[in-house]
Length: 426
Image (cartoon, rainbow, N blue to C red; front, side):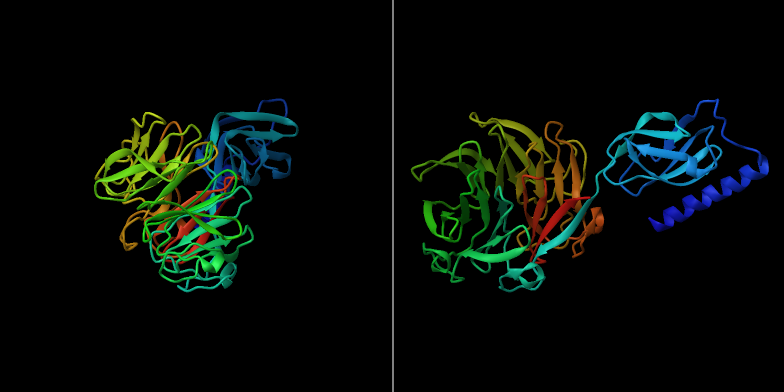
């Protein structure tokens, strides 16, 4: 960014010097209109430098005001036919307007504003271990491809397979153990009196009731707010999802010829979808439609509520990679967990290889826009590592869990970094 800014300013200086040699008497004509011919680039995020081309500008920058979608931009410099600005934060998409001495002109086209996303570490110090505490004082040991979910108050609930515990994280990053003794056994109880064998995924209903899958113990368990566990049913459940309209649970069995099941109130389950290649997770949108992560085929498959007929297929079955675009052109590589937001957009945690391979190209979270089903990279990229930051500069190492709060904040379980990461929009 600094190098680009240097060259843009150098260009403006050269243009200004040439302009002065050509016409030292140039000045703004208050009686004539201000004209914006074009601007470049046409799209960008906060901090993007945009060069506006036009006529009847003023060389006196104190008289020149520029807005993007009504938000004031910083004017870096002006020559007679060009203005260099910096796009402000949270501008949004809209017209670029130039105002000089109270008179304004608007661009014909809109500037396409791209929101920038920044990753921070909410909890975990990166070392595999077990410790409650706040932020970096906490330690996790996920070991497996674990998931997480969030309640209406912003509390996170995390499945921790290797430590065999359910951890709770408050909005300020304070980690406590909600349930689990750490022993490799099955036992119901309160807090540390309960035991798990391999808790993998979490789901929270609209009332804050917590559920976890434990395929090691062939169970789905309910966990009360005080950490008391109770048995829901004997299932080989891996990924679980919940219909927040009515509390119906769904789970996948992650088999080679795998299925999706609906859990009944009596603790039984109905097989509603079959013939999937290692289906891992399921999300439910506001209409009750299911979106299943088919790990073995590297696709996201929609099933219509009630009939369970196939809807949109997102990705190309058997074709892997990090490719964005329309649903039928996009590619994933062994995706794992999926979440929805309040607008039914989908978020997919990318690296669901059994060992969290660093060669997997999806060390990131992918975004699927509801309705259009266009796929983009929400945060991260193809390289495994650890780094907080914005966009593709943020690095993850086998992200397997993702959830979205009511305010739109995205949280990620970063498996091999043993951290919980938080994504903030600007």
